[in-house]
Length: 542
Ligand code: AMP
Image (cartoon, rainbow, N blue to C red):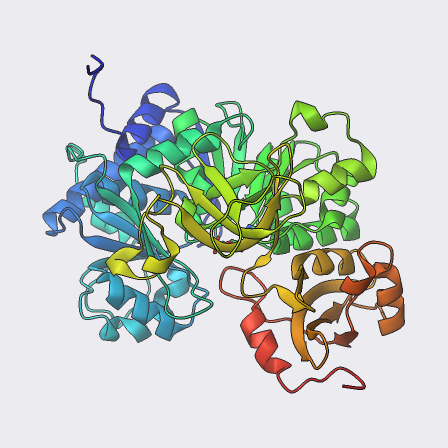
Protein backbone atom coordinates (compact mmCIF):
# COMPACT_ATOMS: atom_id res chain seq x y z
CA UNK A 1 0.00 0.00 0.00
CA UNK A 2 1.38 3.38 -0.93
CA UNK A 3 1.09 6.51 1.16
CA UNK A 4 -1.12 9.29 -0.04
CA UNK A 5 1.19 12.27 0.16
CA UNK A 6 2.14 14.76 -2.53
CA UNK A 7 4.88 14.32 -5.07
CA UNK A 8 7.09 17.33 -4.42
CA UNK A 9 10.41 16.78 -6.17
CA UNK A 10 13.41 17.90 -4.15
CA UNK A 11 14.78 20.57 -6.49
CA UNK A 12 17.48 23.07 -5.58
CA UNK A 13 15.70 26.12 -6.98
CA UNK A 14 12.85 25.48 -4.52
CA UNK A 15 15.34 26.35 -1.81
CA UNK A 16 15.92 29.76 -3.37
CA UNK A 17 12.18 30.29 -3.95
CA UNK A 18 11.62 29.62 -0.26
CA UNK A 19 14.46 31.95 0.80
CA UNK A 20 13.10 34.78 -1.39
CA UNK A 21 9.54 34.29 -0.09
CA UNK A 22 10.25 33.86 3.61
CA UNK A 23 13.59 35.57 4.12
CA UNK A 24 13.64 37.90 1.12
CA UNK A 25 15.39 40.81 2.81
CA UNK A 26 18.00 38.68 4.58
CA UNK A 27 21.39 39.87 3.37
CA UNK A 28 24.17 38.30 1.38
CA UNK A 29 27.26 40.42 1.94
CA UNK A 30 30.33 40.02 -0.28
CA UNK A 31 33.86 41.31 -0.23
CA UNK A 32 33.81 41.77 -3.99
CA UNK A 33 36.68 40.76 -6.20
CA UNK A 34 36.81 44.39 -7.37
CA UNK A 35 37.36 45.47 -3.74
CA UNK A 36 34.31 47.12 -2.11
CA UNK A 37 31.87 45.31 0.19
CA UNK A 38 28.60 44.74 -1.67
CA UNK A 39 25.17 43.86 -0.30
CA UNK A 40 22.25 42.02 -1.80
CA UNK A 41 19.48 39.80 -0.40
CA UNK A 42 17.69 36.53 -1.18
CA UNK A 43 14.97 38.28 -3.19
CA UNK A 44 17.52 39.95 -5.46
CA UNK A 45 19.69 36.83 -5.70
CA UNK A 46 16.64 34.89 -6.89
CA UNK A 47 15.77 37.62 -9.40
CA UNK A 48 19.32 37.54 -10.79
CA UNK A 49 19.43 33.72 -10.82
CA UNK A 50 16.24 33.73 -12.93
CA UNK A 51 17.94 36.12 -15.37
CA UNK A 52 21.00 33.84 -15.49
CA UNK A 53 18.71 30.91 -16.30
CA UNK A 54 16.87 32.91 -18.96
CA UNK A 55 20.08 34.04 -20.64
CA UNK A 56 21.64 30.57 -20.55
CA UNK A 57 18.48 29.21 -22.12
CA UNK A 58 18.56 31.88 -24.86
CA UNK A 59 22.24 31.12 -25.49
CA UNK A 60 21.23 27.54 -26.21
CA UNK A 61 22.35 25.73 -23.07
CA UNK A 62 20.23 22.75 -22.15
CA UNK A 63 19.49 20.18 -19.45
CA UNK A 64 22.54 18.16 -18.50
CA UNK A 65 25.06 20.62 -19.96
CA UNK A 66 28.04 21.10 -17.70
CA UNK A 67 28.66 24.77 -17.01
CA UNK A 68 31.84 25.49 -15.11
CA UNK A 69 32.53 28.11 -12.47
CA UNK A 70 36.02 29.30 -11.56
CA UNK A 71 35.23 31.76 -8.83
CA UNK A 72 35.54 32.83 -5.21
CA UNK A 73 32.68 32.85 -2.73
CA UNK A 74 30.53 35.78 -3.83
CA UNK A 75 26.83 36.54 -4.27
CA UNK A 76 27.31 36.46 -8.06
CA UNK A 77 28.76 32.96 -7.84
CA UNK A 78 25.65 31.93 -5.88
CA UNK A 79 23.37 33.49 -8.51
CA UNK A 80 25.27 31.61 -11.23
CA UNK A 81 24.87 28.27 -9.42
CA UNK A 82 21.12 28.64 -8.99
CA UNK A 83 20.65 29.97 -12.52
CA UNK A 84 22.56 27.02 -13.96
CA UNK A 85 20.59 24.50 -11.89
CA UNK A 86 17.36 26.28 -12.75
CA UNK A 87 17.57 25.24 -16.42
CA UNK A 88 18.58 21.71 -15.46
CA UNK A 89 22.23 22.30 -16.36
CA UNK A 90 25.04 21.26 -14.01
CA UNK A 91 27.29 23.73 -12.18
CA UNK A 92 30.82 22.37 -12.30
CA UNK A 93 33.12 23.99 -9.75
CA UNK A 94 36.77 24.30 -10.76
CA UNK A 95 39.49 24.69 -8.16
CA UNK A 96 41.78 27.56 -9.23
CA UNK A 97 44.58 26.17 -7.10
CA UNK A 98 45.02 23.24 -9.47
CA UNK A 99 47.72 23.35 -12.12
CA UNK A 100 46.48 24.67 -15.49
CA UNK A 101 47.09 21.25 -17.10
CA UNK A 102 44.87 19.63 -14.46
CA UNK A 103 42.13 22.19 -15.11
CA UNK A 104 42.32 21.54 -18.84
CA UNK A 105 42.12 17.78 -18.21
CA UNK A 106 39.11 18.17 -15.91
CA UNK A 107 37.25 20.57 -18.22
CA UNK A 108 37.75 18.28 -21.17
CA UNK A 109 36.70 15.24 -19.16
CA UNK A 110 33.53 17.02 -18.04
CA UNK A 111 33.05 18.60 -21.50
CA UNK A 112 32.25 21.99 -19.99
CA UNK A 113 30.23 24.11 -22.40
CA UNK A 114 30.38 27.50 -20.72
CA UNK A 115 32.28 29.12 -17.88
CA UNK A 116 31.55 31.74 -15.23
CA UNK A 117 34.87 33.21 -14.13
CA UNK A 118 36.10 35.81 -11.66
CA UNK A 119 38.37 38.64 -12.84
CA UNK A 120 41.21 37.08 -10.84
CA UNK A 121 41.29 34.02 -13.07
CA UNK A 122 40.71 35.63 -16.46
CA UNK A 123 44.42 35.50 -17.45
CA UNK A 124 44.43 31.79 -16.57
CA UNK A 125 41.35 31.15 -18.71
CA UNK A 126 42.84 33.10 -21.62
CA UNK A 127 45.72 30.61 -21.58
CA UNK A 128 43.69 27.42 -21.32
CA UNK A 129 40.46 28.17 -23.23
CA UNK A 130 41.97 27.14 -26.58
CA UNK A 131 42.62 23.66 -25.21
CA UNK A 132 39.01 23.00 -24.21
CA UNK A 133 37.17 22.31 -27.45
CA UNK A 134 33.70 22.13 -25.86
CA UNK A 135 33.94 25.58 -24.27
CA UNK A 136 31.56 28.25 -25.60
CA UNK A 137 30.62 31.37 -23.69
CA UNK A 138 32.85 32.81 -20.94
CA UNK A 139 30.89 35.00 -18.54
CA UNK A 140 33.15 37.24 -16.46
CA UNK A 141 31.65 37.88 -13.03
CA UNK A 142 31.91 41.66 -13.09
CA UNK A 143 30.20 44.71 -14.60
CA UNK A 144 30.91 46.55 -17.84
CA UNK A 145 33.05 49.20 -16.15
CA UNK A 146 35.46 46.69 -14.60
CA UNK A 147 35.57 44.39 -17.64
CA UNK A 148 39.13 44.29 -18.96
CA UNK A 149 40.35 43.80 -22.52
CA UNK A 150 40.52 40.09 -23.22
CA UNK A 151 41.74 37.84 -25.98
CA UNK A 152 38.75 35.53 -25.42
CA UNK A 153 36.37 35.72 -28.36
CA UNK A 154 33.29 34.63 -26.43
CA UNK A 155 33.69 36.66 -23.26
CA UNK A 156 31.01 38.90 -21.82
CA UNK A 157 30.69 40.88 -18.56
CA UNK A 158 28.11 39.24 -16.28
CA UNK A 159 26.13 42.37 -15.42
CA UNK A 160 25.94 43.44 -19.08
CA UNK A 161 24.90 39.97 -20.13
CA UNK A 162 22.10 40.06 -17.53
CA UNK A 163 20.71 43.37 -18.85
CA UNK A 164 19.48 41.38 -21.85
CA UNK A 165 17.08 39.41 -19.61
CA UNK A 166 13.91 40.50 -17.84
CA UNK A 167 13.81 37.53 -15.47
CA UNK A 168 10.39 36.42 -16.72
CA UNK A 169 11.40 32.79 -16.69
CA UNK A 170 10.16 29.62 -15.01
CA UNK A 171 12.55 27.16 -13.49
CA UNK A 172 12.60 23.92 -15.43
CA UNK A 173 10.54 21.10 -14.02
CA UNK A 174 13.03 18.33 -13.45
CA UNK A 175 13.32 14.86 -12.04
CA UNK A 176 14.76 15.28 -8.55
CA UNK A 177 17.46 12.77 -9.48
CA UNK A 178 18.70 15.00 -12.32
CA UNK A 179 22.33 16.11 -11.96
CA UNK A 180 22.69 19.56 -10.37
CA UNK A 181 26.38 19.96 -9.57
CA UNK A 182 29.78 18.48 -10.26
CA UNK A 183 33.11 18.61 -8.49
CA UNK A 184 36.30 16.65 -9.15
CA UNK A 185 38.26 15.17 -6.28
CA UNK A 186 41.70 16.67 -5.86
CA UNK A 187 43.30 13.52 -7.26
CA UNK A 188 46.39 13.04 -5.10
CA UNK A 189 46.78 9.68 -6.86
CA UNK A 190 45.86 9.08 -10.48
CA UNK A 191 43.48 11.25 -12.45
CA UNK A 192 40.87 13.38 -10.67
CA UNK A 193 37.45 11.74 -10.41
CA UNK A 194 34.16 13.52 -11.02
CA UNK A 195 31.45 13.55 -8.33
CA UNK A 196 28.00 14.34 -9.67
CA UNK A 197 25.49 15.71 -7.17
CA UNK A 198 21.77 15.53 -7.90
CA UNK A 199 19.04 18.01 -6.98
CA UNK A 200 17.75 15.47 -4.50
CA UNK A 201 21.13 14.89 -2.87
CA UNK A 202 21.82 18.63 -2.59
CA UNK A 203 18.44 19.29 -0.96
CA UNK A 204 18.76 16.34 1.40
CA UNK A 205 22.31 17.37 2.26
CA UNK A 206 21.03 20.85 3.10
CA UNK A 207 18.50 19.29 5.52
CA UNK A 208 21.25 17.08 6.94
CA UNK A 209 23.63 20.01 7.39
CA UNK A 210 21.09 22.24 9.12
CA UNK A 211 20.43 19.77 11.97
CA UNK A 212 21.30 20.99 15.47
CA UNK A 213 24.12 18.48 15.96
CA UNK A 214 25.47 19.27 12.48
CA UNK A 215 25.86 22.96 11.51
CA UNK A 216 22.90 24.00 13.72
CA UNK A 217 21.65 26.73 11.40
CA UNK A 218 18.61 28.98 11.49
CA UNK A 219 17.43 32.36 10.24
CA UNK A 220 19.11 34.21 13.11
CA UNK A 221 22.58 33.17 12.09
CA UNK A 222 25.11 35.20 10.18
CA UNK A 223 27.29 32.62 8.44
CA UNK A 224 30.62 33.11 6.77
CA UNK A 225 31.63 30.18 4.54
CA UNK A 226 35.36 30.72 4.16
CA UNK A 227 35.53 27.22 2.78
CA UNK A 228 35.25 27.85 -0.95
CA UNK A 229 32.27 27.00 -3.11
CA UNK A 230 34.86 25.39 -5.41
CA UNK A 231 35.81 22.91 -2.71
CA UNK A 232 33.12 20.41 -1.83
CA UNK A 233 30.11 22.74 -2.18
CA UNK A 234 31.33 25.13 0.54
CA UNK A 235 30.38 22.29 2.90
CA UNK A 236 26.80 22.60 1.76
CA UNK A 237 26.35 26.15 3.05
CA UNK A 238 25.28 27.53 -0.36
CA UNK A 239 22.20 25.33 -0.05
CA UNK A 240 21.70 25.21 3.71
CA UNK A 241 21.89 28.96 4.36
CA UNK A 242 19.04 29.86 1.96
CA UNK A 243 17.07 26.84 3.17
CA UNK A 244 17.03 28.33 6.68
CA UNK A 245 17.21 32.02 5.72
CA UNK A 246 20.55 32.72 7.35
CA UNK A 247 22.56 35.80 6.42
CA UNK A 248 25.63 34.87 4.34
CA UNK A 249 28.92 36.71 4.47
CA UNK A 250 31.09 35.90 1.45
CA UNK A 251 34.82 36.54 1.86
CA UNK A 252 35.60 36.78 -1.88
CA UNK A 253 39.26 36.54 -2.79
CA UNK A 254 40.77 37.55 0.57
CA UNK A 255 41.32 34.92 3.21
CA UNK A 256 44.15 36.51 5.19
CA UNK A 257 43.72 36.98 8.93
CA UNK A 258 42.99 40.70 8.74
CA UNK A 259 40.36 40.41 6.00
CA UNK A 260 38.59 37.53 7.72
CA UNK A 261 38.64 39.34 11.06
CA UNK A 262 37.17 42.49 9.53
CA UNK A 263 34.15 40.64 8.16
CA UNK A 264 33.67 38.55 11.31
CA UNK A 265 33.51 41.77 13.25
CA UNK A 266 31.62 44.16 10.95
CA UNK A 267 29.00 41.60 9.87
CA UNK A 268 28.62 40.10 13.36
CA UNK A 269 29.27 36.61 12.02
CA UNK A 270 27.95 33.97 14.44
CA UNK A 271 29.21 30.85 12.66
CA UNK A 272 32.01 30.25 10.20
CA UNK A 273 33.71 27.29 8.56
CA UNK A 274 37.07 26.54 6.93
CA UNK A 275 40.17 24.34 6.87
CA UNK A 276 42.78 24.68 9.66
CA UNK A 277 45.24 26.77 7.58
CA UNK A 278 42.73 29.64 7.40
CA UNK A 279 42.30 29.59 11.18
CA UNK A 280 46.04 29.50 11.70
CA UNK A 281 46.23 32.85 9.86
CA UNK A 282 43.31 34.31 11.82
CA UNK A 283 44.70 33.21 15.21
CA UNK A 284 48.09 34.67 14.33
CA UNK A 285 46.43 37.97 13.42
CA UNK A 286 44.43 38.01 16.67
CA UNK A 287 47.52 37.26 18.72
CA UNK A 288 49.49 40.04 17.02
CA UNK A 289 46.75 42.65 17.38
CA UNK A 290 45.15 41.60 20.66
CA UNK A 291 41.71 41.69 19.00
CA UNK A 292 38.84 39.47 20.21
CA UNK A 293 35.84 37.75 18.63
CA UNK A 294 32.81 38.97 20.58
CA UNK A 295 30.16 37.99 17.99
CA UNK A 296 31.44 34.60 16.88
CA UNK A 297 29.72 31.69 18.54
CA UNK A 298 31.28 28.69 16.80
CA UNK A 299 33.74 27.70 14.13
CA UNK A 300 33.56 24.51 12.09
CA UNK A 301 37.00 23.15 11.26
CA UNK A 302 37.64 20.27 8.86
CA UNK A 303 39.20 19.25 5.58
CA UNK A 304 42.19 18.06 7.52
CA UNK A 305 42.61 17.25 11.19
CA UNK A 306 42.04 20.18 13.52
CA UNK A 307 45.07 20.48 15.82
CA UNK A 308 44.25 20.32 19.53
CA UNK A 309 46.04 23.60 20.17
CA UNK A 310 43.73 25.35 17.70
CA UNK A 311 40.62 24.09 19.48
CA UNK A 312 42.09 25.12 22.80
CA UNK A 313 42.94 28.66 21.63
CA UNK A 314 39.52 29.31 20.08
CA UNK A 315 37.72 28.06 23.17
CA UNK A 316 39.92 29.32 25.98
CA UNK A 317 41.20 32.60 24.55
CA UNK A 318 38.22 33.71 22.47
CA UNK A 319 35.16 31.89 23.89
CA UNK A 320 34.37 30.36 20.47
CA UNK A 321 33.20 26.73 20.34
CA UNK A 322 35.01 24.48 17.89
CA UNK A 323 33.12 21.87 15.90
CA UNK A 324 35.60 19.48 14.34
CA UNK A 325 34.13 18.03 11.15
CA UNK A 326 35.08 15.38 8.64
CA UNK A 327 33.76 14.89 5.16
CA UNK A 328 34.61 14.39 1.54
CA UNK A 329 33.73 15.77 -1.89
CA UNK A 330 32.05 12.39 -2.44
CA UNK A 331 29.76 13.01 0.56
CA UNK A 332 28.44 16.45 -0.49
CA UNK A 333 30.56 16.75 1.81
CA UNK A 334 29.50 16.43 5.48
CA UNK A 335 30.26 13.08 7.14
CA UNK A 336 30.71 13.57 10.87
CA UNK A 337 30.71 16.54 13.25
CA UNK A 338 31.96 16.79 16.79
CA UNK A 339 29.10 18.28 18.73
CA UNK A 340 28.89 16.92 22.23
CA UNK A 341 26.40 14.18 23.13
CA UNK A 342 24.95 13.94 26.65
CA UNK A 343 27.22 10.95 27.32
CA UNK A 344 30.21 13.31 27.13
CA UNK A 345 28.58 16.46 28.50
CA UNK A 346 30.50 16.31 31.80
CA UNK A 347 33.90 16.53 30.07
CA UNK A 348 36.01 19.62 30.66
CA UNK A 349 39.64 20.65 30.09
CA UNK A 350 41.89 17.96 28.61
CA UNK A 351 39.12 15.36 28.54
CA UNK A 352 36.98 17.62 26.37
CA UNK A 353 39.94 18.41 24.10
CA UNK A 354 40.63 14.67 23.75
CA UNK A 355 37.05 14.22 22.55
CA UNK A 356 37.31 17.18 20.19
CA UNK A 357 40.34 15.66 18.49
CA UNK A 358 37.90 13.07 17.20
CA UNK A 359 36.03 13.98 14.02
CA UNK A 360 32.66 13.35 15.67
CA UNK A 361 29.54 11.39 14.81
CA UNK A 362 27.38 11.36 11.68
CA UNK A 363 24.05 13.18 11.50
CA UNK A 364 20.95 11.29 10.34
CA UNK A 365 21.51 10.63 6.64
CA UNK A 366 25.03 9.25 6.93
CA UNK A 367 25.74 5.62 7.87
CA UNK A 368 29.27 4.55 8.67
CA UNK A 369 31.29 1.49 9.61
CA UNK A 370 34.93 0.47 9.96
CA UNK A 371 36.10 -2.83 8.47
CA UNK A 372 39.30 -4.86 8.27
CA UNK A 373 40.85 -5.70 4.89
CA UNK A 374 38.46 -8.66 4.51
CA UNK A 375 35.41 -6.45 4.99
CA UNK A 376 34.59 -7.61 8.58
CA UNK A 377 33.06 -4.86 10.67
CA UNK A 378 35.29 -3.78 13.56
CA UNK A 379 34.08 -3.17 17.13
CA UNK A 380 33.20 0.34 18.31
CA UNK A 381 35.88 0.36 21.00
CA UNK A 382 37.66 3.61 20.16
CA UNK A 383 40.88 1.85 19.19
CA UNK A 384 40.51 -0.88 16.56
CA UNK A 385 41.18 0.86 13.29
CA UNK A 386 40.34 -0.09 9.76
CA UNK A 387 38.80 1.12 6.54
CA UNK A 388 36.09 3.74 6.97
CA UNK A 389 33.04 3.10 4.77
CA UNK A 390 29.92 5.23 4.40
CA UNK A 391 26.57 5.34 2.67
CA UNK A 392 23.61 7.68 2.48
CA UNK A 393 21.41 9.75 0.15
CA UNK A 394 24.09 12.44 -0.28
CA UNK A 395 27.00 10.00 -0.78
CA UNK A 396 28.23 9.25 -4.33
CA UNK A 397 27.05 5.94 -5.80
CA UNK A 398 29.69 6.07 -8.56
CA UNK A 399 32.16 8.48 -10.10
CA UNK A 400 31.43 10.23 -13.39
CA UNK A 401 32.14 8.02 -16.41
CA UNK A 402 32.79 4.93 -14.31
CA UNK A 403 36.12 5.82 -12.70
CA UNK A 404 37.11 4.30 -9.34
CA UNK A 405 34.47 1.54 -9.40
CA UNK A 406 36.47 -0.52 -6.86
CA UNK A 407 35.60 2.00 -4.12
CA UNK A 408 31.89 1.06 -4.21
CA UNK A 409 30.56 -2.33 -3.07
CA UNK A 410 27.36 -4.18 -3.87
CA UNK A 411 25.73 -3.19 -0.55
CA UNK A 412 26.15 0.49 -1.42
CA UNK A 413 29.10 1.19 0.87
CA UNK A 414 31.66 3.69 -0.36
CA UNK A 415 35.23 3.07 0.80
CA UNK A 416 36.47 6.52 1.84
CA UNK A 417 40.16 5.64 1.70
CA UNK A 418 40.44 6.90 5.29
CA UNK A 419 41.52 4.76 8.21
CA UNK A 420 39.70 5.33 11.48
CA UNK A 421 38.16 3.91 14.63
CA UNK A 422 34.77 4.47 16.27
CA UNK A 423 34.17 4.65 20.03
CA UNK A 424 31.28 3.20 22.03
CA UNK A 425 29.28 6.42 21.72
CA UNK A 426 29.69 6.50 17.93
CA UNK A 427 32.48 9.10 17.69
CA UNK A 428 34.80 8.46 14.78
CA UNK A 429 38.45 9.41 14.70
CA UNK A 430 40.51 9.48 11.53
CA UNK A 431 43.96 8.06 12.07
CA UNK A 432 45.19 8.35 8.49
CA UNK A 433 44.59 8.16 4.80
CA UNK A 434 44.96 4.44 3.97
CA UNK A 435 47.99 5.20 1.85
CA UNK A 436 49.67 7.37 4.49
CA UNK A 437 49.45 5.04 7.48
CA UNK A 438 52.87 3.94 8.76
CA UNK A 439 53.34 0.19 9.10
CA UNK A 440 55.87 -0.55 11.80
CA UNK A 441 56.57 -4.18 12.75
CA UNK A 442 53.14 -5.26 11.49
CA UNK A 443 51.36 -2.59 13.57
CA UNK A 444 49.98 0.73 12.35
CA UNK A 445 51.09 4.15 13.48
CA UNK A 446 48.82 7.13 12.86
CA UNK A 447 50.66 9.97 11.12
CA UNK A 448 47.81 12.37 12.00
CA UNK A 449 48.17 11.71 15.74
CA UNK A 450 51.89 12.42 15.58
CA UNK A 451 51.38 15.61 13.55
CA UNK A 452 48.76 16.86 15.99
CA UNK A 453 51.09 16.41 18.93
CA UNK A 454 54.09 17.94 17.18
CA UNK A 455 52.22 21.16 16.27
CA UNK A 456 51.46 21.63 19.97
CA UNK A 457 55.19 22.36 20.51
CA UNK A 458 55.54 26.15 20.89
CA UNK A 459 58.27 26.44 18.22
CA UNK A 460 56.56 24.31 15.57
CA UNK A 461 54.48 26.02 12.85
CA UNK A 462 53.57 22.92 10.84
CA UNK A 463 54.42 19.22 10.99
CA UNK A 464 54.07 16.24 8.69
CA UNK A 465 54.91 12.60 9.34
CA UNK A 466 55.80 10.05 6.66
CA UNK A 467 56.91 6.41 6.81
CA UNK A 468 60.51 5.75 5.82
CA UNK A 469 61.63 2.21 5.11
CA UNK A 470 63.50 0.56 7.92
CA UNK A 471 65.53 -2.68 7.73
CA UNK A 472 64.05 -4.12 10.93
CA UNK A 473 60.59 -2.59 11.33
CA UNK A 474 59.59 -2.27 7.68
CA UNK A 475 58.69 1.42 8.17
CA UNK A 476 59.30 4.00 10.87
CA UNK A 477 57.98 7.56 11.23
CA UNK A 478 60.01 10.57 10.14
CA UNK A 479 58.80 13.92 11.47
CA UNK A 480 59.17 16.87 9.09
CA UNK A 481 58.87 20.25 10.79
CA UNK A 482 58.48 23.85 9.68
CA UNK A 483 59.73 25.98 12.61
CA UNK A 484 57.70 29.01 13.72
CA UNK A 485 59.15 32.37 12.65
CA UNK A 486 61.75 33.24 15.28
CA UNK A 487 61.48 29.77 16.89
CA UNK A 488 64.47 27.43 17.14
CA UNK A 489 63.13 23.95 17.80
CA UNK A 490 65.65 21.12 18.02
CA UNK A 491 65.30 17.38 17.46
CA UNK A 492 65.75 16.30 21.08
CA UNK A 493 63.41 19.00 22.41
CA UNK A 494 60.58 18.00 20.08
CA UNK A 495 60.94 14.27 20.70
CA UNK A 496 61.05 14.93 24.45
CA UNK A 497 57.87 16.99 24.13
CA UNK A 498 56.12 14.07 22.40
CA UNK A 499 57.10 11.53 25.08
CA UNK A 500 54.27 10.50 27.38
CA UNK A 501 51.67 11.77 24.91
CA UNK A 502 51.72 8.60 22.78
CA UNK A 503 52.97 5.01 22.95
CA UNK A 504 56.78 4.89 23.13
CA UNK A 505 57.11 2.94 19.90
CA UNK A 506 55.19 5.64 18.02
CA UNK A 507 57.85 8.29 18.74
CA UNK A 508 59.42 9.29 15.39
CA UNK A 509 62.90 7.96 14.71
CA UNK A 510 64.11 11.33 13.48
CA UNK A 511 63.12 14.97 12.95
CA UNK A 512 64.10 17.07 9.96
CA UNK A 513 63.54 20.79 9.49
CA UNK A 514 62.28 22.39 6.27
CA UNK A 515 61.15 25.88 5.21
CA UNK A 516 57.92 24.63 3.69
CA UNK A 517 55.68 21.57 3.53
CA UNK A 518 53.98 20.96 0.15
CA UNK A 519 50.16 21.26 0.02
CA UNK A 520 47.48 20.07 -2.39
CA UNK A 521 45.03 22.39 -4.11
CA UNK A 522 42.59 21.80 -1.24
CA UNK A 523 45.12 22.67 1.44
CA UNK A 524 46.05 19.17 2.59
CA UNK A 525 49.63 18.09 3.19
CA UNK A 526 50.89 16.54 -0.04
CA UNK A 527 52.41 13.36 1.34
CA UNK A 528 53.27 11.96 -2.09
CA UNK A 529 55.54 14.91 -2.88
CA UNK A 530 56.97 14.80 0.62
CA UNK A 531 57.76 11.10 0.26
CA UNK A 532 59.47 11.82 -3.08
CA UNK A 533 61.42 14.63 -1.45
CA UNK A 534 62.67 12.25 1.23
CA UNK A 535 62.99 9.16 -0.97
CA UNK A 536 66.76 9.10 -0.46
CA UNK A 537 66.52 9.65 3.30
CA UNK A 538 67.83 6.95 5.67
CA UNK A 539 67.51 6.94 9.46
CA UNK A 540 70.83 7.42 11.26
CA UNK A 541 72.55 4.04 11.67
CA UNK A 542 70.43 2.18 9.09
P1 AMP B 1 38.12 16.44 0.05
O1 AMP B 1 37.28 15.56 -0.78
O2 AMP B 1 39.11 17.23 -0.74
O3 AMP B 1 37.31 17.28 0.96
O4 AMP B 1 39.01 15.50 0.95
C1 AMP B 1 38.44 14.54 1.80
C2 AMP B 1 39.50 13.97 2.69
O5 AMP B 1 40.04 14.97 3.54
C3 AMP B 1 38.99 12.91 3.63
O6 AMP B 1 38.87 11.66 3.01
C4 AMP B 1 40.05 12.93 4.72
O7 AMP B 1 41.19 12.19 4.35
C5 AMP B 1 40.44 14.40 4.78
N1 AMP B 1 39.73 15.06 5.88
C6 AMP B 1 38.63 15.81 5.80
N2 AMP B 1 38.29 16.28 7.02
C7 AMP B 1 39.20 15.81 7.89
C8 AMP B 1 39.40 15.93 9.30
N3 AMP B 1 38.62 16.66 10.08
N4 AMP B 1 40.45 15.26 9.84
C9 AMP B 1 41.28 14.53 9.07
N5 AMP B 1 41.14 14.39 7.74
C10 AMP B 1 40.13 15.01 7.15
